[in-house]
Length: 149
Image (cartoon, rainbow, N blue to C red):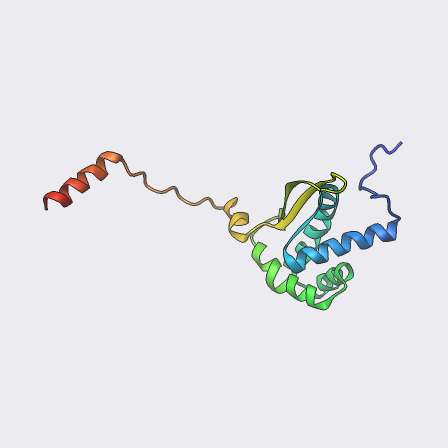
């Protein structure tokens, strides 16, 4: 029985599974939006969010931890210089998963995983004030004044 066992295996051995998740995170950082299966998106989300948290902390130790996942200095630079600063005021929730139908060949459920825009991420913390309502009567009065004057 697999009670209380976390993580999906994807029918792969540990090394292959680890490489798969790392490659998905690399692709997400490069293009900031990827399409994959729902299960893979859900599983890689935690690794992607952890790497962005490393980027927010910004110390040498965290650069090395990010490099251990990404394995590419240019990706680490992009993470620390472009992606992580967007979320400096946000406590997690850097990615979003959107269901995208089913794959044609095997009907696997697809999902789009992308970084949440910085405006949307900070909107949770500080809502914008609502615009003043304009009533129809006011518009009619203004139009009458323009016509008369």
